[in-house]
Image (cartoon, rainbow, N blue to C red; front, side):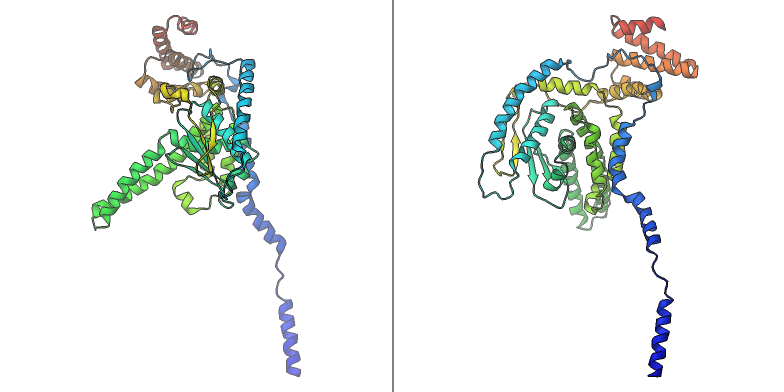
Length: 426
């Protein structure tokens, strides 16, 4: 008994000597991780960055006669546009009633009427503002409470999971980014490109399984190319989708919250295999959106003004809707197309100039002139950019360039008063 008492006493003393866990220090250590992984900063940082975009030209009074146009359109007076939109609203009410009709209870995964109507209005606006009404589009709301995702395929089907839809149900701008991104894949021809690469990969893979070493090496190389191309296509679809969103008049900065949200969930290895990290996608979108012309909103309004409301109906599967193509477009060569290389070089040349990045501006203008030497306004802005570089550096090569660009612009369009002014001043 005496030995037992001694044992208990020793045990008590040893336990009292164990240092208690310092939960305060543990919390401080864990909060260090929160600085990197916390969600608030991730969600809000992008909008702050967008609002505070730097403009190098803000302190420079640059010449801009606004003769560069990026599309065939006219400015629609606001009163005329409002009248047209009011007329369209009456038509939308008819389609809302069509979508609200009671359907068979057999389809247990059917979305609610208001959900179908919301995606219809957003998608229809994107389609009309961008002249994408030359073909029909399907929008599918798939029941999935766990995976916040969207996808599309070569048959013009855009799928949104209920998880992602519900997250942004109160943000038309973000939902427009979702739909615009998937439409971007379609108009850029990504499905045809991926499918062709897949066919070639499978052919080499089949040969490799027979022991063909050369085929095995070719397959591995193509596999790497496939993954690189897939990620680059995601970057491209983000930008192309943002163009569609901007044309349709949605708020691109608010819409980009979609990518901020996805940045919180970059943990799926399968998704990560062929998709870039969302923070990199945000950087890509931020960088490219600085060079979007504000005039694109006017172009979208022009397209909406000159088009009719597109009809909608439930698909035969009762899980998606079909937004039908415009009958007017069947015999017209008037539809959306991605920017051509001359258009891209001209836009970046002009927008870099407007942002005061004159050397970059000349880089893109010179690439334009290598493939198209008929754009008089581009030569004028190249002359302006060279002139500013001469004034800031006193390097005479820029003055010579400025004169050469002005001379070429004058040859192409001698009656343009802005070109003549620049030509005479030099």
